[in-house]
Amino acid sequence: MTATSLPPSSAPPVRVRVNRLVLYTVLVALTGLFIGPFGWLILSGLKTPAELAASPVHWLPTDFQWQNFADAFNLIDFLGYARNSLIIALIYAVLVTLSSAWVGFGFARLEAPGKKTLFGILVGSMMLPQMITLLPTYLIFAKLGMVDTYWPWVFWGLAAAPYLVFLFRQFFAGLPRELEEAAIVDGCGYGMIFWRIFLPQSLPVLSASFVIAFTWSWGDYIAPQLLLSTDKSTLAVAVMTTYVTSAGTPVANLQAAASVMYVVPILLIFLIAQRGFVAGMSTTGLK
Image 1 (tube, rainbow, N blue to C red):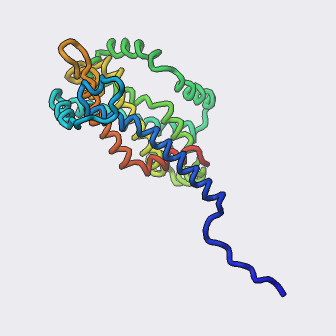
Image 2: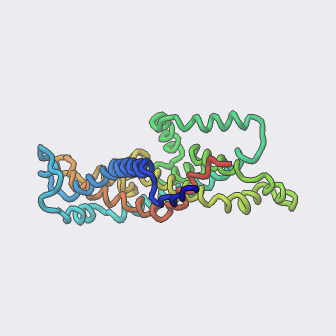
Image 3: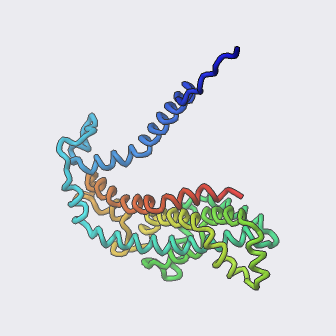
């Protein structure tokens, strides 16, 4: 007589539950680590200058100073500076995304002598600090009469970006060779193949590249400070330089409130494009 077997339990084993608990704990801790600075920035924007300078630290404001956000918005031409930042970021992000896609397509699908060497130099250029090219860049644009204009961002966009070229090259290299072979048989050139076949296939990478490039330009402080006058400058420069007292001392609570409003557009863009961004970043290394 055989013993009747018991049905397997639907509950996960103890080890699985413990592993899940540990994983969720780590994820919650990492989430708090990443959003902690932004939360502290919001709290700083709701404090008085005395509370920010207090020792020991006042973690929470005694009375939430919502007026700080209104003052930060009204004390400067906030919308004007935001418009300048938006124009520059859109010009750069659109142009650098398209130019990087074109260069990445060339590295992925075309054959030429020295292609691997050129690609290695391109990838190696990502390790160059921005400060090395700062002075030569300024001298070039000054000689061309482009200081205090938005033309530098147009040329930077047309020149492509090494990291974005790398993303597109990895993605295009994973597409089947039969796509372009069939197009060539039908009489298409490589320009038409890029625009009509490869570029529509790369929407996830296009989304990721646009978000990355927009964030680079929106958050850039050095180039606008160096190349643009006050009227044409960006919100990043205005937030760091205009909230000061008559003695030149920064008003930290207004800077914090303005910084929160400055970050909001980037958060909105990422929330809107996050699905394409994640998909683009996860598929660029696959074949």
